[in-house]
Image 1 (cartoon, helix red, strand yellow):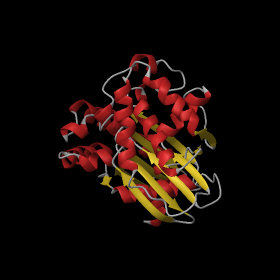
Image 2 (cartoon, rainbow, N blue to C red):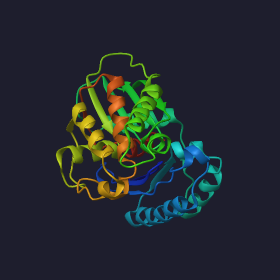
Image 3 (cartoon, rainbow, N blue to C red):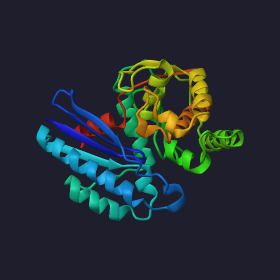
Length: 295
């Protein structure tokens, strides 16, 4: 059975379609910035909604063309937070052909774990860290999640709160790190980590940046040391957004929030006591597809 998954995130809208054997037929994303400004306003920006709906319309055509028999669409942090979420979901249902589910942070964490461990990157117990635009999930377990928490800090939210300028000034960088440390102080892992896996576009982008690879290079299984992340934070903090957009290793659309994402990754690794983390290209989307079989 051909299955399709749509993830409407705070920064990106993504699509995965797999065949009956679980092989990718389509895996794509578009940065629409749906959640930019949400932390302050509590509502979506009209231009970001319009862009997101355009992408969802294109995804509907792809899903139909590839003959998906089952589709699940989810919306995450930004849609959980806004006051106009139902209006957005109404519009999304019209263009996508099904109504996206607004999943909780706990379910997002569970699905991210399910997708992250499907890449087979190491021995359990596994810690999956999923850095999104509006939230970060920490999920720990062997065969299944034993501990899961979702923290309301991500690349977009931290940028909106603490990083108004590029290049940043020292007190802004300090404030951003302090904000992430404060938010992550609630994370208490129940045991030692056998394999740590980084999930999501921030991790894959940091991997290509750290190794100076083309932005579309395959980085599944890449080891990302914490010292490389800290180095990237320093480099990105000293650049304008226009300069960041010119980096060949980065999708230009991620330029406004990649520094915020790098800081979130840096502080997440500190709270988890990690010297390095394995980057995966399997994530929440894969978890959504796998969940279709269970449903």
